[in-house]
Image (tube, rainbow over all chains, first blue to last red):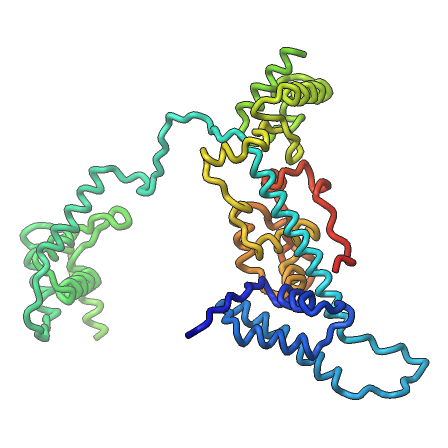
Length: 250
Length: 171
């Protein structure tokens, strides 16, 4: 048979200490440190304080109490120098803090009563009658048509993605790709995305980009983009003057 | 005066928050002195009438509120909230801020002997306290104080109406 003991829940170490002092019916100015410390530790050992921070705060007070207890056990000098001011009782600081906490604890109870009393007087809870509906604009200036087009593009790309059945090492020849780009452009100017249209693998796209960049560097392809993120237009370059120079450097 | 009283009554009836005498004077175009006199008369009339509501001074202004006697009746209409949902820990922290403001978190933790992060957070979220500045000390710790909402929710006209802090010789 197990017994379930309902332990009081304390907001913090001061509340626990005050409760122990009250139960022992001792003066806050003359706390029997040894007895109170034992009871304090007993509570901690039984209560499982789940909040780690709170548990730490309880332990700090336990350490303080043990320190006080240790000090009270040490013998004091029998005849203190009458000229020296008497050493203050180390328990005094604890008592002062306990009293200070007690004042605010009592004040908090009063504030709780005020809250409850004020809550018993209801204000009119009627807001201004409203008809307008407010929409936020999370998409900025985007129109439904634009969103529709973007969605269609994304969905189309998803559908066409090939299923991977076998992993092979793919090697793509950069010079061959450059020749392919040139021959494609020889027929007509193209957009960069046109060159990628049937090339789905990432490596393929990268090699095509490199081919275009290399051809542009050599002046064999002209690249135009009117605005950031706009369409990239490609056409055959006019001359080989750059080509001649770079070839010479190699 | 009858006209002014009716205007003020209409404003108080429609206002969601307590109305200050200054605001009432600006809105009605009357002097603050006349507004104050009209408010007193209204307060007396409601008191004499023994109706469902009274005019209360609140947070430096005035607000129509139901008489306390009808709290249980209205609780059947609205679900009541105890202590505005504040935990004892939050209430203790609120008491320290109310009486010691402006006050730093370190002072609250020193008095309570525990960390006050979550208690302070719940007070901030409810708008009962706010940051009111920084202490001119190393680390420039944040100072906290109570808000107008605090006064409204405790039914106080000003911080001077807080009940006095209990004496030290209470134990």
